[in-house]
Amino acid sequence: MAGWNGTLDDWQEYQDSFRLQAGLSFAIDAWIPGSRKDLAWRQLHESGQSLRQNYQTALTASRDEIHSLWLDLSLQADSLTLSNRQLDLAERIYQRTVQNYQQGNASLLDLESAQLDWSAAQQSRLSAQYQYLALLIDLGYALQLDWREWLGALNP
Image (cartoon, rainbow, N blue to C red; front, side, top):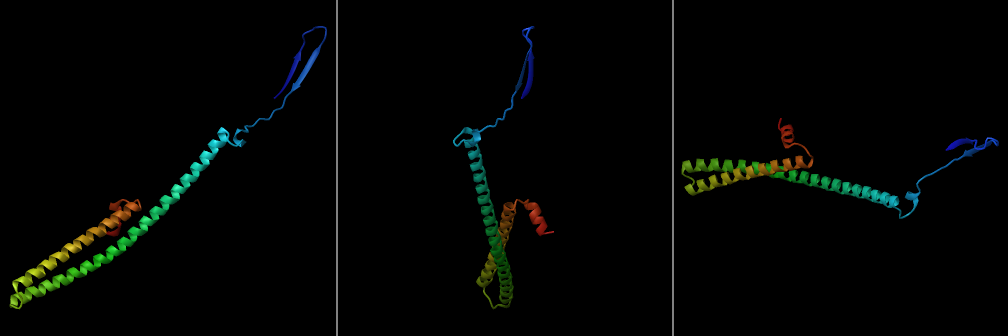
């Protein structure tokens, strides 16, 4: 701040004064260890570090979950293929048993057993399809995708 003052109190004597001021001010509170601003800055820094660590933990957990779901989906796809083959085999056995029963070469108990095995294979395939679909939905959820769009893209 600079200024100029001139006063004339006594008419007989002329007085003049000049005052020049320069100043520099800055807050040293943040540079003093243990001060309020220093503690606030440290708390902010620690909060940022904590958030960064939480983000890394969540990211790792998400990657692990997606990888696990992908492996489960792969295993379930193999299980679905196996259940389809079991159903085909059970159906052929049932048809062959029906032919043998009509020719008199198989008993009614054999026919009912083949029909029960065929029904069990159908139920097994439906269960495998349901589990596969549930894993697809879980994977879509983990990837934050709408399951309708996710399944629509798989089955155009």
